[in-house]
Length: 248
Image 1: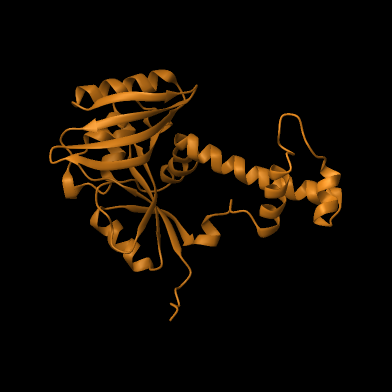
Image 2: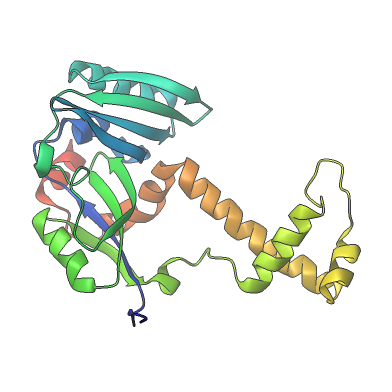
């Protein structure tokens, strides 16, 4: 017997619950705290006294990252950089005194999937997915979250590939079109797909743009916050704690 589910509902919500030494490490005393953020790769309870988490931290300036590492150490959180690039690095952090069930990162909301969690100086930005809008609203109410952008999955996930884009991109990749030394040409792919070269070129360009957008959002989470969320919040009423931070 099948289930008749409604279309998935997705919402970006900024949550702030004090005290939070992890958010504090990204806020600090700088007016540029909105230019650094960390995507949560994985988080789990290691023992009754600590939590381990893997984060991808991205930033505009290296000095911002150094300050975050110093504040993590000051708050008794051990950290180790696993991988580093120009504007981001992957880090493991051990939190010796987590907030347990009070922390939205450690709580599994009923019937809601946390698709993404990004730690910022203004709070934790969650990307929540559920078949029920009420379940998402319940989670946001528990943690005093502010809904930033909500809608159906199709409306929110504009970088999803269409079926034609998937077919063209997968074929191009499998035939070696994206190899350093190309193993096929655009017209050969177009012939195999029974379409013109110009049409295939447009489809591939659209697909490539979506893939690049998804990659950038994944590797540089601070850009999501800085270019989208922060601009939106500047024109609206911010959470009280965030207001005071913005004035510092």
